[in-house]
Image (cartoon, rainbow, N blue to C red; front, top):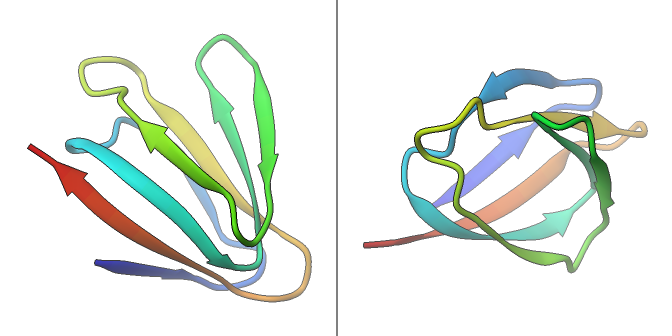
Length: 75
């Protein structure tokens, strides 16, 4: 699955629906987790999300270009 986010987009705290691999195809994202830690993820970053059952994470597009992300759900 591919997700597309416009420049300036913000998604408030939410858990991932399943465990999943995420790959930033274009753009830069800022991910914040419930303990206040933040990461800036640039094009080419691969990361694993496993936060079901928690407050989850927020996501923000950084910069003036949209961001595209490839998602691979893990059963």
